[in-house]
Image 1: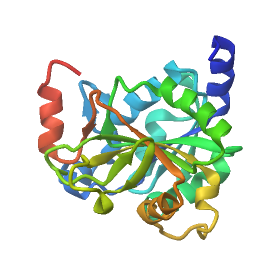
Image 2: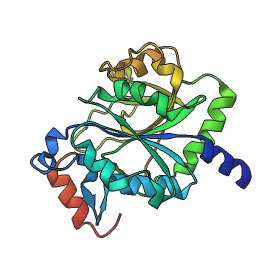
Image 3: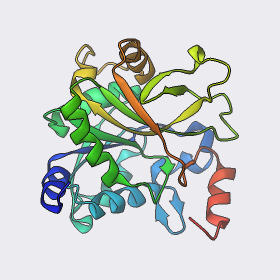
Amino acid sequence: MSVASAFNLSNSIPCLLLAAGRGERMRPLTDTIPKPLLEVHGKSLLAWHLEGLAKVGIKQVVINHAWLGEQIEAAFGNGETFGLHIDYSREETALETAGGICKALSLLNANDYFLVINGDVFSPHFPINHLLKRILELRCQQQFLAHLILVPNPPQHPHGDFYLDEQIVRDAELAPKDIPKLTFSGIGIYHHILFKDLILGQSAKLAPLLRKAMADNRVSGENYRGSWHDVGSPERLAELNKSESL
């Protein structure tokens, strides 16, 4: 992919950062601050994401929020300080992942594919530009409704979510015994058609939509082995902040 085509693609692909969760497992830290504003090495989780997106030339970002969402808007405003344009998809109560994506679609205004990243994961070296290249491949193949970034199972999630059958993602419950299971990282590419049957404003989980698409061989994926952390507990957050390497 040429520099010019990469620039044009990054400008046209929107990204949704999911930040609407209550963060129950992070209490009491999240009683007064939304989970994605918790800091790792002096910067909030969302700030790490925004910097990474800006670095590869992505311009349009939507952040959904519910719990203490006004703090997120106050922290980042319209995104100008990052060289981004940020819109906010406000949810009175969190709509689960798929419901939140459905509500944000009008702001994302995606022609086909868009990026989605969980606001509470920490993967500062993840190659977002690789996802942009993957979108070009998805457009050529015209088969897949989603592309998932999977990671080796962390200690807190030893049984995984899915497995890879070459580039096709399948449900871990269907995995042969000798096939390694992997965990969904919370980073993915989605086609807006995946959410066409959802009702705007209603809560909906992402996993059933993915499993339905998997049954039709319409979800691809890959195993990312770089640094990735699910910041799911105060203890894990503290460990990250003690670590000298990111």
